[in-house]
Structures are given as structure tokens and as C-alpha cells.
Length: 66
Image (tube, rainbow, N blue to C red; front, side):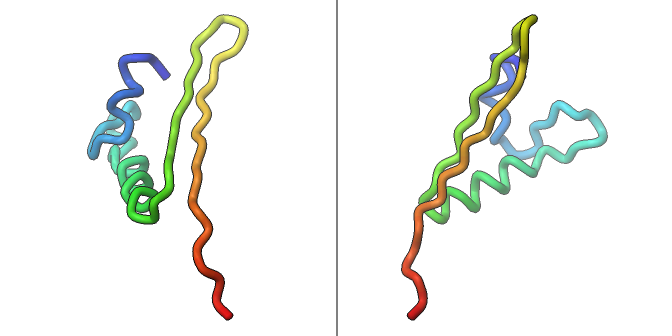
């Protein structure tokens, strides 16, 4: 993922997939995670020896039913 793309990936309707994507997946995911007081972070690297993108999701534990 390019450095120019990363700041926009959580925006509604932003997609890099052209007509095959709606641009809602990461936006909806982030909304759900935020409402549950979690976090979603992204790291991406583009290099000749290896490129990739990693998402880290954290959701805090809640009260367990008795």
C-alpha cells in the first residue's frame, strides 16, 4: 500500500479496487471497533525484497456473564 493511500483507507467510499470495491469495508470495521473502544492500526511496506500490509486489531475484554 502506498504512503499516499494509507491516510485514506478508513474513509467511506475510498477504494483502490475500482468498480469491484465499495470502499465501505474498512470504514465499517473501524466504526464497529471504535464504538467498542478498540483500535485498528495499519502498517505497510513496499520494498523489492518484500512488501506487505499488516492490520492490528485490539478489542478490550468486557464483563463476562455469570
